[in-house]
Image 1 (spheres, one colour):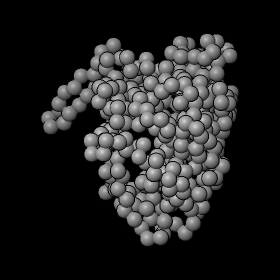
Image 2 (cartoon, helix red, strand yellow):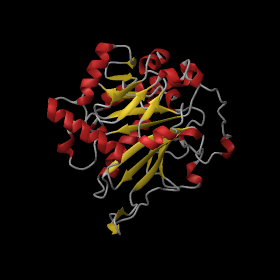
Image 3 (tube, helix red, strand yellow):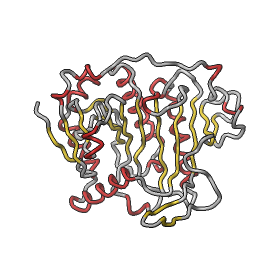
Image 4 (cartoon, one colour):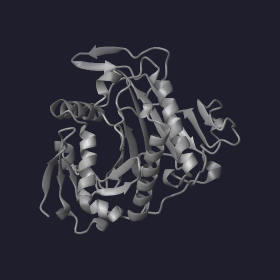
Length: 326
């Protein structure tokens, strides 16, 4: 297959699919033994040793908890009782780094998200939702980011499975591009761009990795990274925080299935997953959007071309990636 430039119908960004740069997709996979931290040295085995007041805990028992949320000890954005101030430094615009930064911890030291029980996996997302709603009530919050870094290559400094929630005083660039692209597509076609993608992927069939009654996982036609996956609720839902319990459970089940496939088929790579949802403010303005989860395994490294042009090169065709993961 020759290389192709493909344009993302949401963001407008270009990427290159260049499978000829790797003889076989499995050549990209390097088995590196995951280093497990000892329980006795883990700060998340008993978070109350350093943080006695979780902001969310289930069940409400500090000795028998399954999931809890604590303030991040080293926050990117500091929590203060004032909204961030905007000002200029010569030609530059600045906003104070004020917001929230919390850590969601599941109890089992050796069970990452795909191997949690169904109950505990849904509890993690219940914690996401409850904290999201709490943070969104803050008049200073503009966007709430929810994500997991799994493994050191993905930015995790602690082995024990955990997730992060951050409120940001601006809409992040990637989300802004996604929102504006979705809005433009809706204005032109009177359809949700993501619903259109789901419909096409179901018709095409070859890039679907997993599907249940209420959610679908596929390798996007515009994959920025090898083996990138996206998880969509099938129902058109703009706001993560407004998702009904049964719809959320379908998405959680699909996410667990996708991450299991990545672990088994790709030799347990590090990865990031994150939720893209509509911003906290101006809810009526974002009904065109469709929230989803993006999964990026840490398979390749961006080099000079990618960094110099902003165009990512993906060495595994998404059709082949989906076939391998299925």
